[in-house]
Figure (cartoon, rainbow, N blue to C red):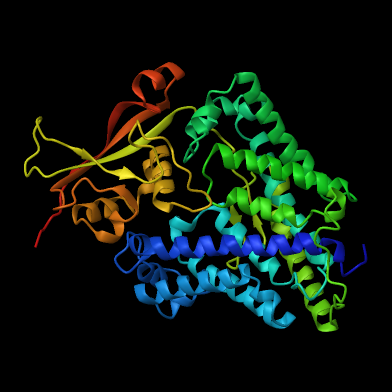
Length: 477
């Protein structure tokens, strides 16, 4: 491999860029379809309120200068269209400098959304998409060979992502060390998928094998990324296989898919027998001098910003999913340092009764992704991100996670707010809004094989206590 161009990674770069563009499409579409109820002008945590409290230097965003629901929607849909064009190959049909501007525009547009997204965008895969997107700016297009320096920066990102997740597990819950965490995780994860019930019922020895394989993929394979080929390729493929297992077993938005996309950039096509399938063009141009200078400068910048994330990996008080600067260029990652053993869910109900009595009939709201109806099999949603459903899982862990947005959420249910109801699967009050709503706390568990056969229910639930008392609108028009 030469110092700067690496034509042997041409195919890996092609797959990486197209797949990353697809993730951008999903992220922008997710923002466009959900923002009004979450952060819109009448949202639960409105952007105008946020930008009045938080200065631009802390959270750089175009929405500091202007915000309206129409402007945000146009911004998000424009981002989706730009990303779709890249997915179709448009960035490879323009000069190198234009391709870089195109990728930079996608990064800047999504940064503007994340930086005003507040708790709804406080997930590791948001910063992961931004960091990956920033590196993609300097990866070149089909007219140039991939630069070795940026390929190594992608390996450094993949290392921090996986090794950080592995370390935080080993430093955290003892069930990771005694290989028992997956006795619980498939059942208690934030949003189970259609196969999660079956994964939960695998034999316990296999759960221990799953956990051990996870440690290999997150603690050993990342180190091998920095070894010569084909070892690095096989390490990346092991990580991809682990991520696909996670895709089958749960719904983690685009976290697993983004990890797979980054790992693809490590794969040398010739190391897996694909070198002759899609090779680089015969007339592949050498990188221009200005491009080499820009890539070297970007590499130096990333290395400088890597100081705090690297220290974080070494720290006994390791932080996960943390950005150390407002552009989210080099971040800390990690997930599930602790595992919950018992699943709780917040169930929201409403009634049309003016006065609440023991005979009051309560009707339950259904969410799209989070468990509710015990007979409804969990659905696949990833890589699409259901932000409200995820925050409801955090609310069940602790009411503190719901402090700022839960009250406004209930208020909008009392109004039959159209944008809020679009985030739900079913509104039990289609004709007129409820007079009261409340929230109850339930203990959920997966049913056994026998219970599933006899009742058709995937879940068993038991009431625990009241989460939020019955409440009504103070004034009605």
